[in-house]
Amino acid sequence: MTKRYWWVVISYVIMQFSVILGAPLFYFLFKLTEAEAIIYFTIFSFLAGLVVFLLLMKPDMKEGVSPDASATGTTVGWIIGGVFMALAAQALAANIEIHVFGIKTESENTKNIMDISKAFPIFYVIPVLIAPILEEILFRKIIFGALYNRTNFWIAALISSVIFAVIHQDPKHILVYASMGLTFAFLYVKTKRIIVPILVHMGMNTTAVLGQLLLTPEKMEKLEQQMNFIQQQIIGG
Image 1 (cartoon, rainbow, N blue to C red):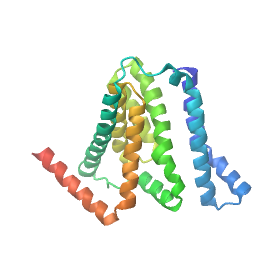
Image 2 (cartoon, rainbow, N blue to C red):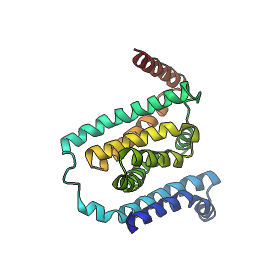
Image 3 (tube, rainbow, N blue to C red):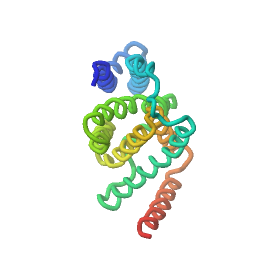
């Protein structure tokens, strides 16, 4: 990897752990509650991380897209289709977790994010907009890209997807996160445009947010049961 890319990795790590020192600073400076200090500093650190990422990636943006990148119309198609592909991969991985490993579908990481977002709606900007940009630049363009140049798709995609899964700190659902990472890597290679996995990632997270906001727990459980039945019929048939 180039020196710039290493700085992107370092910036991401700093961003993730800066809340340890930053939240107490916000607490004392702005007379916030502990929860408010953590939330507002987290938003601040993600915004700062986004600015740093974009500055470091500026030379890449000036280069433009690859000569063999997909055409605009095809790209739009992959973005739309990619959301459904990612959702299908996630559902398949979730079914494997349920029926093979006996793991419940509820993700602690997703639940925590949704609980925080409901209490502080401004927090939605992180999972819906900022996190997909940061994560796709880091895990697909940089980590996957560096490995792909030295190995092959499957090795690069598996390693980068496992790292992507681990960073979400939800070890029970590592298969679900890894399946999403594999899908994003495929879309990146297929289109040669990093904007595709970024927008698909945004679409997935937005779908999850809307599902949590619009559906009651009872409706969510019923929908999951219906999806599980349909998938079992397809696989069984």
